[in-house]
Length: 475
Image (cartoon, rainbow, N blue to C red; front, top):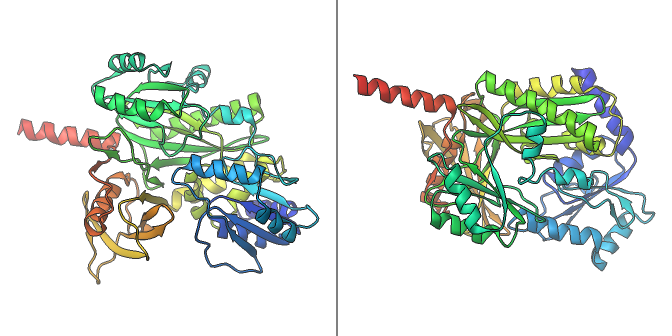
């Protein structure tokens, strides 16, 4: 597929070549700056929301740390939005110095809806009708329109008694999930709570009521949280492989812990096909109804009854890092920018799908971690670890480690990351159980305070457990 890579990079070079580019917020900014430099950008200004700028090459980019990182995505995006619409004198001066002729183009975060920054176009700004599709309390209408199987659900305004009454009706024995939505950005399970008792319902209501307009009540679905990405081109929708969303459950707490994503898990083939087929139908619907272009995520649960969708995100999702790592020579985030901007990439959706899907199936990756507040490290501390079943221990010096646990300083306390060593990781199984074991070790070694967690159980694992119990009883 070298000709596809060449064609993509040539077309992206036409968009960014000899251009001044402003990267306003986002992740992997050093990588983006290097990609722009490779494509021939004249120079790049990086406006980083974090407090700690990485090492950089001034020939490739000018780096400015804004120090506006928030503990939640919504907080950080609100601060960034204020900066884009009403920048202070210091930022204005930096812009004038970098781009005195106001000829630069701007790339902001995947959440951004602001179309210009001090007169400069933001290439990847989202349309309002695209953003509206992310609402968890209205998305069921899309599943019904597409005749897609889904779990039963009820949606209410902020009326506690009605929400609790719906919870009692929909509870299948494992509780229900409340998903709130409204004007605030909703990501990373911020406004999602598991409700198993009246007390947990009160706790969830107290969190959701100030931030949300409505709440969806759905049965808790046992299985692996998974996502599949589609990329909408003018001629069709490229669909990629399933990605595990690593979401450990907190014991005796309503709040979930969103801990990232990984591509090691392979759901049963029939579920994979079900996910990809629905994603293609969703992509075509988005293209035809709201003129959508670029990446979207289709999220749901791989259950014993198959894939049950829960939401879509009409943006470049965080799990795209798994595909970036699988095809490092392809600037996927800039492909997203070009598609949203209406730029002709010179290849078909099927050519793009074949390139990225095959690479991602052959090269597994993950980005697993969590913010921690119980500790405030002043330097980076790393521990090599070994997994034995669902347990985790420190590796001996002569052992080949399965992963590295890293605790780093963070503007909001500490950052705990689990770097899985791809060459020593089994393919096929979910990593949620390994994450729970590693985080328990981090609590023990560093006092990170994540507490008692439990993993989601894969459909096939659950069946094996039940069979083993049945065989033991029979014997």
